[in-house]
Image (cartoon, rainbow, N blue to C red; front, top):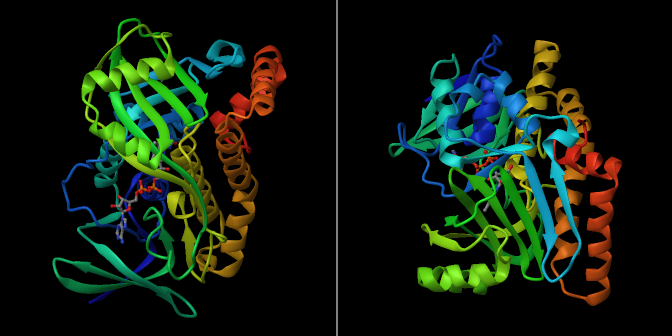
Length: 386
Ligand SMILES: Cc1cc2nc3c(=O)[nH]c(=O)nc-3n(C[C@H](O)[C@H](O)[C@H](O)COP(=O)(O)OP(=O)(O)OC[C@H]3O[C@@H](n4cnc5c(N)ncnc54)[C@H](O)[C@@H]3O)c2cc1C
């Protein structure tokens, strides 16, 4: 069976759903194809740090007020293990109410999905897309649902599947950092309210993101070390964490279920690899979670693509000039975000003495120079277009 849409979004994750919501008041016929079954909550264990800029965008999408499981970040403490250099970013110094927010991925996903159900966007669940091809005037999307094959034609196909569908056809540039992130929830004896910690160590960055009465931990280490950490009993895990992080939040008391994610940079050479097609969010660029930029950048991708679509003449949808306009608009922010996270990981993940001393000096300078602080914080909150 073949159906026709103006826009088909492949992947109803947080970025694909955000795009669908940004378009829902247009007259365009939009559908979202999502592999997860209907009414199934996402099981993803990660927590997301949202920037203040993302809050503003989610507010415009009508989703922010529906998010209840959210803890604010008003201070970010950045340090380097075995060094005196450190920098502290404070919301009040930067004239924003909060620097960011922490919430579980499923909470964000649930709120976006719920809002979509009240829109005129057609959501097709249990729909696993198997192929994307194109002709002169449309993209053709094959998907399987309940064992049956279906085809959709759309003037614009937006690939927001996290990056698998077109990876073989259009291989991304990959940088393997040799690191995994171990994530879990921890509690401690002296939590510092609304303060996030980013601590750079030679094994990779470690982040404590304030959530409810404890912290969401993102502990980066080599793949093998992360696998070992999964096998430690809780006592050993808490002891090792204490040694690695120090006692800034007192004694670590409890640890929740642990999950490991392999990390790397994957960058699609082109955001519009074929006619009538745009890659969005992780499908366009998958970043290291240091500084929590991935979803924040994906949300800006979604918002700006929606603005381009709403601005152009209807007959230009999916055409070369529209795709070029979107790429041009996103180029600076995308490249700057990739360079920023990649640079942080590479600069901080080693223990060369001279480099370490330089990093300590850089952190101290960041702490002392208000314009440098504002520049970094603005980049983290709004991207390079902010
Ligand atoms: C450990 C870790 C911590 C992170 N922390 C942060 C953070 O603090 N802040 C931040 O901004 N970012 C963070 N990120 C990055 C963030 O999780 C991603 O950038 C974000 O999830 C990307 O969203 P997406 O919608 O593009 O892709 P995804 O979240 O991967 O969603 C893709 C969707 O597509 C669906 N799908 C896949 N294949 C198909 C198919 N063939 N057919 C139909 N549907 C399909 C999937 O079911 C899924 O729903 C972190 C990442 C990791 C690994």
